[in-house]
Structures are given as C-alpha cells and as structure tokens.
View (tube, rainbow, N blue to C red):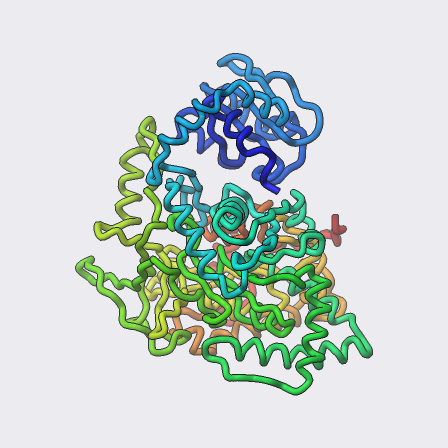
Length: 635
C-alpha cells in the first residue's frame, strides 16, 4: 500500500528541496524539459524492476552512453534514492561531483531535520491552479509531450469519477476498496486510479482505499492472475490486452474441459450472456430458466480469477473488441468502457451499471461539456448532428471528439533552452492546436454521439489512412473485425497512406507472448488452425493456413457495415515472424500500437507487399526467411 508515513516523506523531500521524477524511460527527456532535478527516485513500481540500484544505473549507463544521465542531463542532481532491495554504491561519479546514493530508510531520516512549520508554510503557498504533475503522452503518433496537470485538474476528475460509479457501491459504505496496481505510475491511468483515487476515497467517502502492487514481471510472464487471486480487487482497470489475455487463457482451458464440467459451462454461458446483454441500454429484459445454477457457475469462475468481490471492472487506454466484452458477459462479468487521455486528466466519459452499451465508451461525466465538431473547407468548426444509429453513423454524423471542463490540462511543458522540438515555439503551436480559443480540447479522435448522449469512437484522425485517391480509411474497426473472425490473429495493422491500395501486417498468437514480451515462434492453441502446423514459420509456408487468415480478411472486406468503401478493403497481407510487444517497441507501456514505429521497423516488408512483380491475384506475400528456423522454447 502507498502509505508509510506520508508526513515524513513530505518532510524528507522538503529537507532536500526535492520533487519526484518520472520513470527511467523518460528520465533523460524529462530532465531536459524540467531544467533541474535535485533528486532522482529509482523504484520498483514506476521503473517496473526490482533490481538493485547499481544494476538499474548500469542499464541506464549502457543505454545512455557513459553515465550521461548523471553527467550531462542532471547537473543539479543532489541525491539518488532507492527502495529496491540489495547493495547499492555509496556515490555515483559525475563530472559535477559525487552524487550520494541513499536508501529509503535514510531518506526518511532526512525528514527529521525539517521544521514542520517550514513545511506547512510551503504547503500554504500551493494553489489549486499550480502544476501538480507532469504526465507524458504515450507517443503512439509522434514525440511524447509533457502534459502539465494542476492540483484542481486531478482532484476534480477523481471526485466526479468516484461520484459516477457510486451505483457499484464503491465509496458508499464503510469498507475497504481494493485496487491492484500494475500500470506504470507515470501513466495517467496509473496515477489517478492507483494513487489519487484511494486517497480521495479515504478522505472524502465512508470507504477507504487499499492499493496492492503487482510484481514487476506480472505482465511479462502473464502472472497478473496470481495477484488478482491474492488481492481480490473490488475495482480493476484492465487495458484491453490484459482482458484479452485472460480470455485467451480461459478459452484454452475451456477447450480442454470435458464431461460434466463442460456441460455446466455450456449450460451457463448463454444464460449469463442473455442477462448481460439485457443490462445494456438497448437490451431487453431477460430471465432465462436455470439462471440460478448459471450464477453458481459464474461465482466459481470469478473466484478462480480472483474477481469474486469485483464491484467495478473497467477498460480503457485503447479500443476493446465487442466480442471480448461479450465473452466476459457470458461469464457474468460486465466490463465498463471509459475514455480519456493524459490531456484531460485521465477520464472524460464513463460507462456505468445503469448506463452502458457494448462498443460505446459511455457518456460525459458530470461537469464536463462534450461536442463532436466537424471542420469545414474554410477551417471553421460546426457541431455534428446526433447519430441516429450509434453503431452505423453516417460521415456527416461523425467528427472530432472535443471536451471542456476543469479536467483539461494547463498545457504542454516547454523547455526554453531548446530551439527545436520541445522548445517554446514548439510548445506554443502544440498548445494552440490542442486547445482552441473557447477552451475546447481537440482530442484527435473521430467519433459520434447519439440522442441518448452515448459516445462511440470510430477512429483517430492521425491514424487515418489516406489513399492515393484521397479516401479516408479508419483502420481500427476493420482490424478489429478481422481479429474477431479469426482468433489466430494476435495483431493486425493496415498500411496504405498515399498508396493505390491497402495491405496488412499480421502477427499470430504464440506461446510466451504477453504484450510485454513477443514470446516464441510456437503457435498458441488458438492459432493452431491446421494439423501439423506448429510454428509461425510453418504457417507462412502453409497455403491452407494462409487461406484461413485470408478468409477472415475477405469476409471483413465484404462486410459493408465495416468496410464502407472499396478503397478500405485489404488487398494483400503478410505474416510477421514475431508478435508485437513493448520489448520490440511496437507497443506502448499500456499496450497501444505504435503505428509509425511498426511501419518504419517493417519498411522492407511493406515495400515487398507493394512490389510491382507481385501477381494481381496474390493475396499473401512471404516477406521473411523461414529456412532453418527451429521451434523456440517458452521462457
């Protein structure tokens, strides 16, 4: 739990005139933009490692060349503080002098030298509008930006979020609300859900917050389920990839189940799904026979997952497929979609027990204004009309999702010492393009809103594929449909900017792949489509296997509700040898796809797919060597 004498921590920070730092992955960039960092905290939570400090410093030294972290970027560094176990050096050498390394216990003792009156005087000077935190954007479409969030931004969004989910009973009764923290605390969701929300619950509601931290390797080794069973969270935020991985394991286990247990599962799932669908806004009342027994089965499944006491399960940070929500609905677990971004302090829209629709990210939280704006040829914005059908909105009913309220960021931080990217002029342009003169934050997301006020995201403007003919294609709905039709596909990314047609890069589900790690080349059970085909390389060589992937693509191409124009159809594809991952730099820390990185990394494969020598009727192009590649062992 994030506790341990907060007063002493504040006094210790005060004694050295310090402020906390973001994780090491942003260390170099952050220090340049903040200009001076008096101390650096290396921890097992934000760094996601439990190595002793000297190993972490060695990693930084290796990646940033000759201890550049300390020598070049931190001229005013006074201390390095660690709470990771193990031996640590007494000093770090720097051209600016020796930098003391202190452990957590010694750091806390520094607080004893601080006068409480001095600390209180400093606290009194803090205003709601002062910058409280710097949160870096994920960098999916460009350079990560430092988002300045005020104390008021963070307090407001936390208060309205807790208010919005009160129907789940969270914050309404005197009991512990348990959260498991596994996302980086430097990420906006990790900060608000894992740090601020528990503090708010404890201070302002009858409940109190308890936070348990997952182990650093849980995402890499897919052992997050072990932590869920130990903690039994009452609230849980799972990014889509986490929910998908849990579903994959459950499906694989279900496929091995036989006899009476299988019969019970087959009996319960359709009944639980009918009830879950009935609870959506468009659902019709359902009370199927045998529901009592089905709920008993659901209780067993929830207990096996560690979710038997879950009051509010949610997903965000990236799009989630409707069939994933339906699968958990068939287990009696309703997952609610939330939507937001770093620039709006985490959350703008929310789905609740009473008001949710699968495929929609809900409605704006209280105190937040929301509009869908369309930009005309003259550059002026007008509000789009409400969608008659949220899931089949016309182009005229869609536009950029824009919002306004107390949760909107102060702006992007500039480094006045920089004359290029990150400098004052750069930040000024970014701020003006993000927040207009009326205070509306332009999200860059494309979507619609219906008469009920429910919102759906249909794409992201920066992710739109603009073909050679000028056609705009939103890739996410098309990619999601292919994955829905063919469970063997782990990731698919469409490419086609300024090209005559669209191609796709496909990865398959393999053993050992966790999102954090790319895994092996051995096909997971869900990807074993053809008898005798056991590796990715064998799948590339198999005409029968490739045809099964193409069948899902073709069915998607022919689905006019998904592919609304011929220019949006996928004409060719290839299979990538390794799954996308954080390790491979294709995914962010919250497992979102970095499209620009993928396209650059697999540039040669893309060129082969567009090669004029490829036959007109050839839908698959093998772009990678498959000879002499042996099956890899799962770590």
